Amino acid sequence: MRGFKTIKKQPTQPQSQSQPQYEVADVLNKLGSKLEDLGLNSWQLRTLSALKKCRTSALGGHIDACDECGNVSISYNSCRNRHCPKCQSKNREQWIENRETELLPVPYFHVVFTLPEVLNKTALHEPKMLYDFLFESAWETLQTFGENRGLKMGMIAVLHTWGQNLSLHPHLHCIVPGGGVDESGAWKNLRSDGKFLFPVKALSKVFRAKFCEKLKDKNLKEYTKIRQNLWEKSWVVYAKKPFGSPKSVVEYLGRYTHKIAISNQRIRKIDAETVTFSYKDYRQKGIKKQMVLSHEEFIRRFAMHILPKRFVKIRHYGFLSSTWKRIKLKNLQQNLGIQPKEKALPKAFQPKCTCCKVGNLVTIATFDLRGPPSWFLEMSRNLQTPKI
Image 1 (cartoon, rainbow, N blue to C red):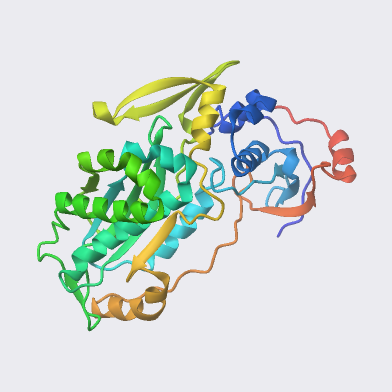
Image 2 (image 1 turned 90 degrees about the vertical axis):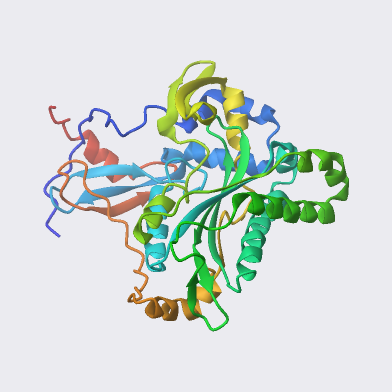
């Protein structure tokens, strides 16, 4: 590393086009103490508090120096909460890299299992129970169809609880290989052309039956009240066409694995009373629209999608489960003619200097919520601000 040349005050940069102008945290700041009046539980309030403090002095920070140009700058710490719009990109990239080592040269399908609206009230009051049933019923449904062919299936499922307008809309995005392993551990495609998984109407009926049975066993009183509504309409299971290649599966998964209810980029305006955000209306072929909500209603809707504490939202099943992969996946890959890849060690995060765009930032000091150390403040006061 080269010696530090000087300590500068970083000039104010024009806001990047990719940098959102508004954030969920801005709405929380506008609400202030009114947040306590929304009737949220303690876990939701704790999560929202973390989002509000993310990358602010409240969480402390660190002083970084560029190993190329010597520029010294301050960065505030992230909250690292999985519901935070600013803290997911690094986790997503690492997860995708790990999945790339597990790909097979077989057809993959995107299957979506959706719960009917009549269950939304149960989702609000008993989210863990309902979402566990959703995972279990989806997997048992696929497993049943696979067993009828004498095959052990595999599935990666990601829970989403929202619609584009922040309404409650629980559904699973599942990546399902178009085949399975037989009793001897050999791979078999469901169809020779790889263009079909299972009939979606049959999947829907089995999925509904399995879910309703679980709800009936666990909460007979609730099931009895909504039984007619649960059975009078078909449930939605949708299977998209197979992906173009196994690699495209990973790229597609990246859109879903670490998404949250709304990104900061979708927030268009925040004023003294309301929030305006963009959304796609899929009932009108995905046309883009804007919605205006009060601060209170916006945060109330956002909080509906804060998952229960320690709830696992990405789950792996069958021959894609951690136990099976740890022992047998490499043999299956070799039998299918591909060389297994070792998982790469987690990369140390090395941010680039925003001043010279070349050097790496090296942390030379950390500080807590009391602020930067006195020696840094003293040096900063003695420096002239560079001309822009």
